[in-house]
Length: 428
Image (cartoon, rainbow, N blue to C red; front, side):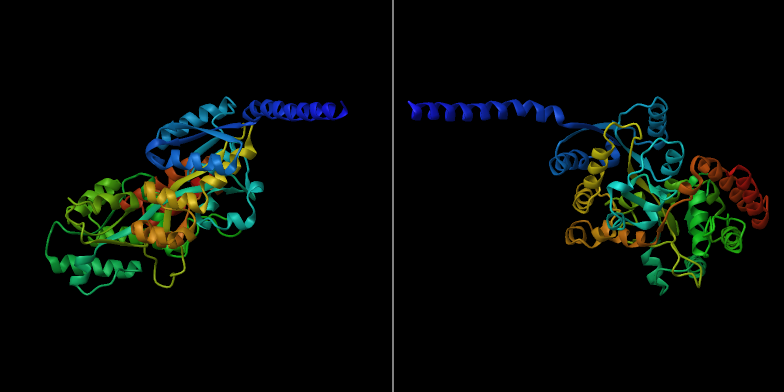
């Protein structure tokens, strides 16, 4: 009888454990953290669902809904602003343009997330890109993928005249003059870019400016626009117009206008963002076998300067999210080394971790990505982190004054003096 009671109690205990285990299953489902990731379908495309599933498994305890948002930055920004103003907790994670983190952080819309990443982990990202998300000692976003301005050139023409790709502006101008004169083609331009009054014009001047050793803000936070480097940069741009190295039509060019002229074999050098590479190297492109690219030049004596002006996107966490920690853990996985390898192979995205550029899979299966990556070692961000909510107005001021100099309405010295005065008047 005693043995039977012990056996009954044993069976009861096993049954009780089974019931407890079964009851625990729904609780586990209830404890699952639900996150929403907002990112454009075209911007990250086929890589998004694959990486979301992988990170759900790696992080554990999370389920992530992909909210497909417009790939047009102004449209997605407008949606985010509406949500933030209403203090909505969703989406938890947002893809932000490189010039947004400073503004969003200043307005209290995105959460600082450096505590979820060690210093060594943050050091694995491109420092020039990460700087765009660092404000007041805190990090408000993590780089996802990068693009930027590069110098494309006609390798066939350079080879014909015995030139290597130029590393300095002095060499580029000299090569352009020699090739245009030698070809005797009135339709051939030496240099083209996006010098219409757009954000791209400001980016162009910044590349010249950095290549002259300039810095928008110095180490003490002082504005450096109206400086020797600033004047040298703008004077060089004006001089390229005056000498005919750059055609007058460049003042109306947006990126695709410049790309089209180059693709029609009507320019030696092209300085625009890397999204043009796929079109330039397509099977039906007249320059597909002749186009090559290198980093944006610098001025003689400034070879260590960063001249690759970057664009791209980062991931940030909604300040009003109820799951900031889980969102940060997801971002850590979504921007990890392996995730960036897969994003490159699946979607052609250029990684924000320099180590990925040398990965054997990237070198073998995505050599264009690896080649672009070499230029991003010299990456720098526009001064949006330091200027916060004032950045759009500052960019507009710079575009206006640079245009005035290029049109001959002001001297470079006067244009930059006026720009600096206006910027100082609106800076906090």
